[in-house]
Length: 398
Image 1: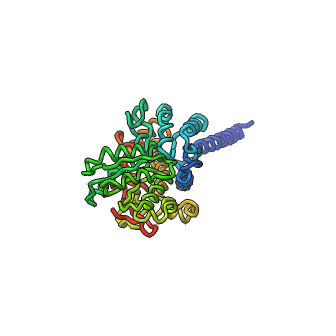
Image 2 (image 1 turned 60 degrees about the horizontal axis):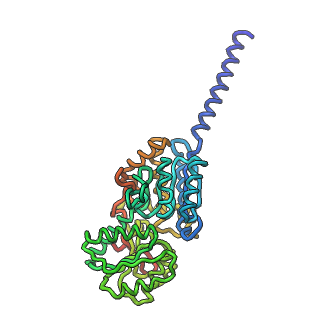
């Protein structure tokens, strides 16, 4: 082979080699980033968990259409907790150990969140939960004995303590002095009761009745009759799911004239459907999503929420089966918080955790987040509004 042919062969070989190398590099760059998403897709809270999964899918598709994470697409790996703490732990282990996800979103309820907290902290998996209760991001007696500091767990919904403060500011403005509590006996209800009790004095409120119920109870008239016979000016109920509508109907059945204030877990068309006419006049703290069209145009969240509603209702038509509720934006915010951090530091767990903890000024559906080492939620009372149900609609009242 003459020198010229040798050079040509070498050039061809180099071209092929570089071509293969480039293709391999492209493939590596396009390798999906796995994020686990586990929600109540069956069980009593599936009406929350299922649309949360749909929103998570919608967000991932949106991010991927916009180029993914530095050229790599996100891949959502789904799990069903069935609303059961034991099942939630099994699902979390599968996602972490078998699927090798780099981060987790979910679960749906405080109880299942607490069931997986210790495991995820031990495995050092960055997790943004979509639960309402505070204990998942707390330590000590309120975060669960021996759970330690919540370094790897964050949450996108407002803390119960923030929702309680919003309620109390509203009642303070209404010059209310005496309140009656009726709270669920589950983890979410106990968390609400703790903050309702702890913060009452700060707002000049006296608790004149304190009743509880099981989340599967079908009647709360006994507890409400006791409340009726006190000098309470307002009833505050703290629960999530169908139990809240039962309380509302029982209040009406007993002809109790006191205003009923529900918690931040109930702004949902399903609540109005279940409670019927008894829901009229009920007040509750909510994300701005439920009354976004009543916000001033100067509100930085309004444009973001409007785009979310357009995608949810018009592009994906999720509203046909699952009308928008206060929970709808939680997965959107959780995934964006993780995705924004990944764009900055990649998928290394320690770096990703640190970047999530430095989230500052992210404008989401549920608020404008400023997460810190001491606050793994990052939302204040200004992220919430008080809404009243009137003529079957959500009306911003505070």
